[in-house]
Length: 485
Ligand code: ADP
Image (cartoon, rainbow, N blue to C red; front, side):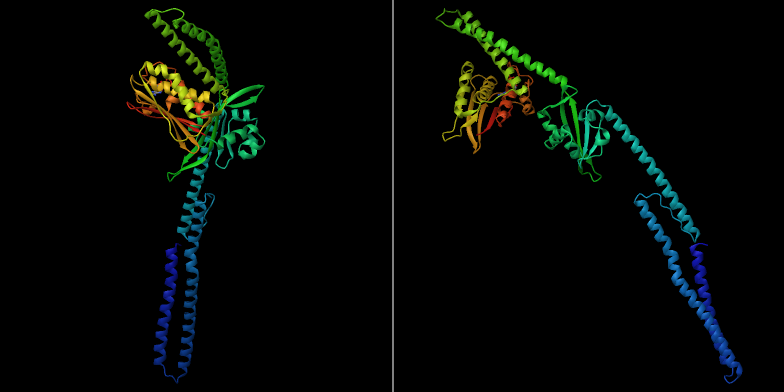
């Protein structure tokens, strides 16, 4: 029987009883009014009418009370069970089953609900196993990469480590994966160094260039690794981006490192081997050009000048290469002492005066009349930087132009030295690249090595200063050195 039939039957019985009660009351009333109250039939009729009314009344009340108590339960109970079942499904408990009985609709509802739960369970299990397979697949790929890779989640748990990384860290998978990176690092020096590096690399992309190679000593040999920290950024369903951890990638650069060391040794050998003969050539040229030794005809003088110019260029290029190797090998040693900025400016002007005169370029000095702080720098290195900047300003200007070299007190703790020209200027696209090794702005015809600015920046940064450029095409350039005092 379904709920509707049940309800109809109950209400029908109740209504019939009430109707019977009313009919009986009316009938009894008629009988009693037609009977002589003094006759014995009147007593009997009254008793019978009362008994019948009591029986029917009691039955109606009993059925009414039964309906009042039972009917809401019959309707509410299945709804409660259904709500509970839906909640269980919402909590991913797909094993929930409904057993509603008492009517066909409820049995049908239970069967449908259970079928839905079964389908959801099957789907859930199959997508879980699919996820597991995909995860395994990705892990196998990362494991087969022969560079060490470590993944740390945002709670600093070691989420994943490939075999190469386990090898160099000298860890076993089971003692690392899923464990706290910090706890593991307490027992592992290398991991500790990597974690310390991670703190300092919130923005690895920009710092990558500066990362010192990581030296690891294992299997009786030294290996060098370039460490890269990649933040894992996940896009949430609301479009916001959430930091979810860090991937540490190590690139084995041992071979490059060996080549680099060989290159550095080679360049410094070449420098020392070339320096003596070049100096000898320059000395001989000086003697040759000296009128006291004997006069030269104009062609001979031209040749002698060409020998001097090329000799000086050779010496400056080999000097730049040596400086570069010093910076790269970490052998750069500063010998700082207190220096007045004007001394550095004077040195740079003297070193460039001949060249400036040759191109009829007027060097102007912009030096403050008021007091300016002294610098505590390796004056040889900073003078080299200013000489190089002034030489560039002259070389990249047109004849009869002017260049300015100056200094000013930037603030209480910094002094600014600058070289400004009004030459060709530099396209903003190259404002950073010109500080890279061997970079020359495309189309530059004037001879050069592309090393001067990069070495200059290294020298300035070794003093905790900065070297920057402001330049506009066709209007000129201003190179600014800021140094702490
Ligand atoms: P080099 O001058 O020997 O090529 P640098 O490292 O000193 O090497 O300069 C790198 C490049 O930057 C130069 O090749 C040139 O294209 C550009 N450059 C440097 N200084 C200036 C300047 N004052 N004006 C215009 N371009 C410049």
